[in-house]
Image (cartoon, rainbow, N blue to C red; front, side):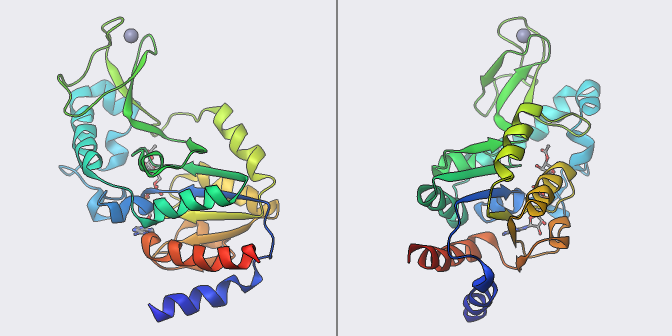
Length: 252
Ligand code: OAD
Ligand code: ZN
């Protein structure tokens, strides 16, 4: 623990005494301590399928039941999960800053559950389903009464309203993030491997525009290549302490 305090104290000396706006990118690692397995690594496997084999339009076309079963398994885990101190620290940060944007790759809804407001869910939300034909959307509880679920409007198949491999991002959302990230002084990247390239690109662009990038992740990631400050700790452990230091620095 002492090391963690010292490490943070040493690393934040170069952060300016005044920061006007702040951006956050989170990935599956921030929810790991809430009991939600990350995608990559041994925990990411389900019945010997890799996420890359299930989270695709092709997999859904071939076997919608299998894909929905995987999402149901995840929805059941997520339903029981509570936000952890890292999620709650981001709520406090948002209260402190007038200009704050939280961009999450997570579909678990835990940031909203914790109380964060200005959130962009870049990869969608696991609680929402969308009709593949008429685009009707609705929030569906778990357990689902039927798998796969059908649209109440047109009776076509419903799919999880999340972004799958091979699908394109919502350009409106990307534009909002890019505009905001152009003017931030600081960017936190928390718990993401960077194996999905668009969020890495957004972070890199912010960095090129002058943002100081702070990574919190126990392991190396694609963000580590350009992060200015790297904290190799778990998010729920490091973020509350980092925030204590920064708040003190900025309140004076
Ligand atoms: P990954 O599962 O690829 O990476 C999780 C990262 O979290 C790894 O770098 C871990 O080292 C780190 N990690 C693990 N425990 C942690 C902890 N307690 N605190 C901090 N970090 C920790 O997850 P993402 O990068 O979010 O896409 O994956 C990106 C996207 O790939 C996901 O949004 C999902 C997936 O396919 C879609 O659903 C479209
Ligand atoms: Zn429909």
